[in-house]
Length: 228
Image (cartoon, rainbow, N blue to C red; front, side, top):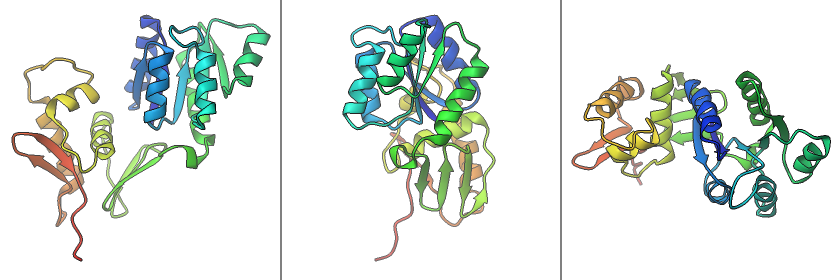
């Protein structure tokens, strides 16, 4: 699933991001409320994890603004503010859950999964489709023509990135940043190797390949054109 983390503490953010990515999930990170609001209004997230005390727009204001904009992404507050009144204030602002720091990652993970399961399907994109290829973001499954495709976590992330940008040309740099979190060129063939492995699993034995190499530009995934 794809998550949004709004957290200004670098150590906490790194801990949370590592935990979810290690389990194969995608996490977008905003260090302040203003950027968090921007990301939440332009992307579909299964759950948003929001610290109450973030700069530029505090967590409560952020969630109130999202609810006013009719964005119903489930929100769990992650904060040091542990008083009963603080919890009530967070829930009344539009939050769905409240977890006090310090916390165990296992509890955060369980609460996020619970929120994702009960979120209204209409408020989030939980299934991606390109032709007969289907990815269920909540169940973490991929099928093509109804047949299951077994992917490793990094392969799943790579395919999700491609499917979210279906019919677009995705460059090597975009993949390094969006999938591996590399903001530099590692000077390896890591992208090419993973694309090759992914293509073998998704397209092998198929009359039509979905993952295409755009020479000199990058890659794309697109459904085959249908005859008029």
